[in-house]
Every structure is written in structure tokens, then in C-alpha cells.
Image 1 (cartoon, rainbow, N blue to C red):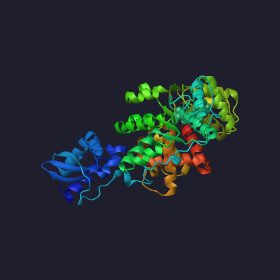
Image 2: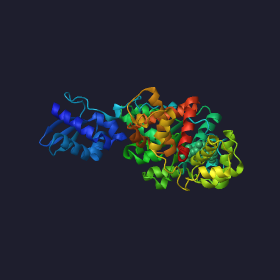
Image 3: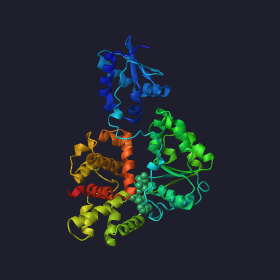
Image 4: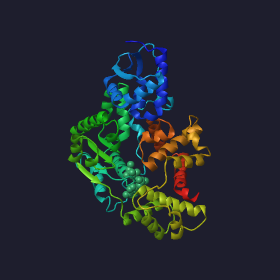
Length: 459
Ligand code: ADP
Ligand code: MG
């Protein structure tokens, strides 16, 4: 095999720099560091890849972009060819790995379940039951009382902010209480995906399988992220993990934003989901919305007259997260303006709430501005490179809020912060942990920034 000449190595660096933004994504970020140019003959650049999987991925997804970027860097039209190499070519300098330029964290691959704690607030006690969620709530309770004996798998689906994560974690809490010997593991679908892809990359799939197969109650939240990305490779692994657990009589609970029939997945997996119980959480009716607001107001010791709760429940109908945000907004505006909490005031401050459009106008830029304002810094710093703690913590809070408020993937959040998915995932886990351990500063920051986001109409 030919060695890469310094010119070729330089062209490769330039080509990567050119396409880094465009191709940024988990697969590209994870594997591009293992691809290196080994020679250029007769108009063909040879690229060495570590294994057939990367070869397939590169040829399928990235060949076109790499070809044009390299053609431009070298200054003539050319083709690219991938071949599997056992060893790295000697003369090739380590190529820049975009993902690692910003690496602020340990490798994602580490299968660390302790990093996905349960939110202490998400229990059955704090879950208000109404017509929209009575059936899923009863099913969830049955599963928690006798894991693997009632509904297995339990598949819960529904729109953003309707209580899927709350209900799933309530199962986790109750199982831990009633069956302390069982190993309960909560994992987001996307985290499973990254655990898996990095275990392949780091040659630790045996460990990955051992860890995942030692689970007794497996709670997989937001499965749709597994179905949407890296599907060809991750979905079969999910399928095998599912079977291994199912066959050894372990409980599986899955949530998703849509029903199995609407997911882009293999029929064999779809039919597994349908073996158990598939049930949806619907948007809450008005009585349930009022009951949720009453419970929330009582928990947070907010004095809000019933007619105001009723008014808020009428205005906000389709997401409980937005409903809670609206309550906070009304109470915060009243205290800011030293006024009583009245229906008039609620009407004034909820005037931008358009039915059916939760968080109208909130995007990552709004969140970044709100976070920056809270910490007295410039929003640009959140996207910048500084790793100082004064910047790193606000940045992590901002990433966490993007996930919570916008419900978008780690990777999409990464795009807005010029970071890779692993950094975002680490940030979300860290803030979740700090909130779960009731860290006073972070809790105060998250709630006051959430208010600020809700209050942006008053600024
Ligand atoms: P999802 O996972 O479906 O997007 P979450 O479970 O995160 O939604 O719920 C969003 C917010 O609404 C959380 O703060 C949760 O506690 C609250 N919530 C949802 N459903 C209920 C309910 N039935 N009773 C009380 N709070 C609820
Ligand atoms: Mg959720």
C-alpha cells in the first residue's frame, strides 16, 4: 500500500475542514478520525478504513462529499476508494478528528447506567390521573407491581410533554421500592445508540452486551431516536437485546413519540412491540389540566385562585410541560409587577399562547439568550470554545434546556452549540444529576431561566 505523501495529507486536512460543518453528525464524527488517505494514483484517492462497517458507512453516505471536497483541495476531479486496513498507514499524520476538537468528556462508550438517574419528582404520587392517561397509568402500575408478569413489553406513546417520561420513571421508582433486588435501568433511546456505536468503535461490544443483558427492568425512553438514525446497525442490536431480555423473562418498557405502526422499523421488531401492550397517552382534558395545575401549585406553595387555574387550563391544552410553564409565567409576572394573581393578569401574560403551538417562537437562540442573561455573559460565549467552569456550566444548562423545552436530539442540539453529540449528552446527564441531587444553584438557575424563557413576551 502506498504511503500518503505530505501533499495528500494536507489536501485531506483541507478537505475535512471544508466539509466538517456540512457533515457533522454522530456517525461522521465518530468514524472520520479512523479514515486516512494512503495514496493517490490515476485519479483515485485511496482511503483506509478500520473495518467493513466503516467502509460501508463511508461509501454509502459520505463518498460523494469526500470526493468533491478532495477534488477541490487537490485541484482536479478525482474518485475516492475505501479499503479496509488493519494498520494505520505509517506516514499519514493523525487526521483532525472534528468530534474530538471539542471533547470535554470521557468517551461516550462507557456503558454507565448510573449516569441516567431517575428524577425524584416523577413518581406515581405526583402523577395526576384523568381520562387521557387512566389506562396507561394503570398499565404502568401493574407492570411495576409485577414486572414481566403483566404486560411485556409495555409500549407507551404520545406527543411531547404529555407525561411519558414521568410515567416510565414512576415505574422505575415503584419497582425499586417493591422489588429492591431487581436491576432497574432507565436509558434514553439515543443513549443506547451511542453506547452501542462507540462500543463497536472501541471494540467493547462484549462488555456492552454483558451490561445491557444484566438488566431486570429495562426502561427505554424516546425509542424514536433509535429508529431514526444509524438504524441499520443499531436496530438489530436493539432487537437482540430485546430478545435476550424478553426470553429470560425480564420486563421491558418503551416510550416513543409515535405508535409502533408509524415507526420506520423492521416488521419483526414491530411485531415484538405488539406482543405486549401498546397504549397511548392523550392530551389531557380540561379537568385533568386543572387538577395538574392545582397539584403543581400546591407542591410549589403557590397561591393561585381557582378561576386563574381554570383560565390557564383553558388556554393551554396540548402539553403538560407548557401548562406548567404557563403557571410559572403567570405567577412570576404577578410577583415581578407586584400585582395580585388574577384572571386579567393571566390573560395579559398568556396572550401569545396560541392553541396547539406550544412554546411558540422558542428556539435554541432564545434559550441561549435567556441562559446568557441569567449568568451575565454574552450568548456567543455559550457557543465559543472556552472550557472554563464559568462558561462550561451555563453552556451545559443551556443544552439541557434545549433538550427539555424543545425535545430535540443531542445531535441537533450539538449543531447549535458547535459541539458533538457526546458533549451534549454528557451535559444533559450532568444537569439531570445535579437537579436530582437538588443542587441549589443549578435548580435555581434552571427554574429562573425557564421563567425567563416563558416571560420573553414581557421583556
Ligand atoms: P414527555 O416525556 O411525554 O415529553 P414528561 O413526562 O417529561 O413528558 O412530562 C412533562 C412535564 O409534565 C413533567 O414536568 C411532568 O411531571 C408533567 N406531567 C406530565 N403528565 C403529568 C400528570 N399526569 N400529572 C402531573 N404531572 C404531569
Ligand atoms: Mg420524555
